[in-house]
Length: 281
Image (cartoon, rainbow, N blue to C red; front, side, top):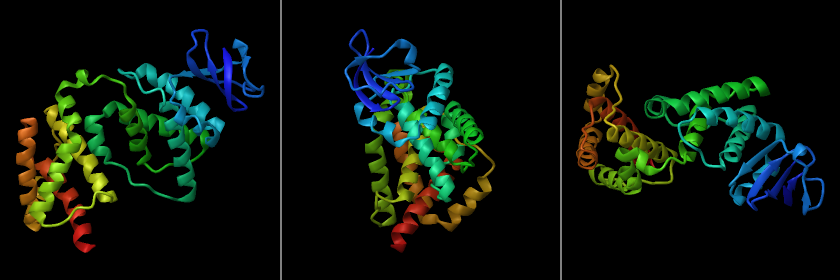
């Protein structure tokens, strides 16, 4: 293993015997000016195919957090039914480090609904819970419950599963930006407002739509006993409910699936948040 660049005292960018680039972890591997050979006995961990743009993170994240993430990733990867992006160990470590920093400062960042995420991504949510719990024990810190969703999203976004394996979702996923934009146009037309795409409420709405479309493509639905609440919300927000009916018709043409009342209820809530901010602006 030949060092070609030192990242810090304990991390180096190397070339292996096949001339493939690899990030190497090991105590003191970055002390000597490259190029030089590293004894295999000094190498503690290796990561292939890491994008160079993420390498600066190694100087920003505490070594113990990187070590924690790398050790847990080895176990988690063996439980996943798909491969994950090689950059995940660094982006996840960065997320965890920042999450602990936010928690210590009392800063709370809202995350997507755990209820919606558990329906579409139960495995990733379980991994998120396990990883957050392990982090809290090891570093003696208490994170907001929403960090479970934050960790789960990293695994969802980092999976390398080919689109062909998700046939029902694949075509919709490719067209998601267009479907979201068309949905937004329906809201603007029906509610007679101009929707800002750069707000947190809109980002939360977009995340909800993404999960909703995936459920529809897989013939799944949110299901609970909120039907009385749906009728009450429909009466209170009639214009929003009518708007949701138009969106429901559009989604049926896209997915060949109909929205049930529970799904419509959540759309009413999300769209009402988006609209209230626009009207009050």
